[in-house]
Length: 158
Image (cartoon, rainbow, N blue to C red; front, side, top):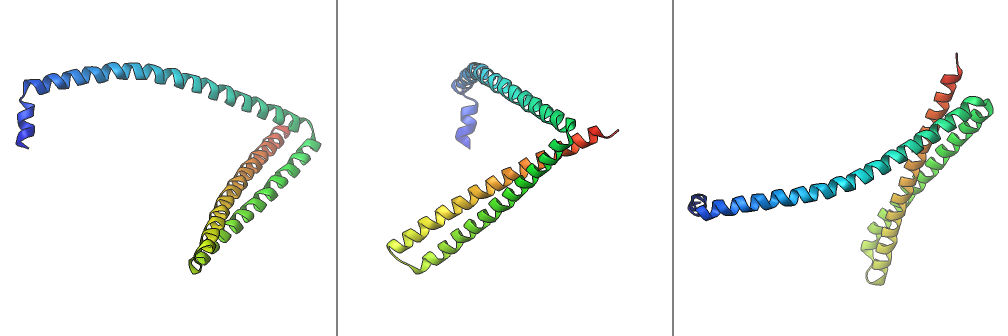
């Protein structure tokens, strides 16, 4: 602690603090400019993507508003998304369970059997995770389809 207090009263310490502060300030300006340029490119990409998605949504909404038949087809599409969601989530749970049971069963074996059980367990866990992600993506698609159908029906009613 005494050494720290001695450094605080030192002229050289204060000069080094000022020099380091100036260097940090100069580098931060340079880095900020690079960061701003990169962020503006990303921002424009995101804005263009959002505009494309909105235009696609409005196009699909116009199609659904124009035809009762298209609304029925969209309803069947939603059911298909829900069924695939259910399938993928069940497969994901099955693979996850298989992975855990294989890992638990691997404790009884030694040698090559142990490593084969561990590798099958890891593959099963990864497969279960991926199947679960696909199931959640299908759930998102089903909810978007439901929102599109509901919005098209509300706009058709007087």
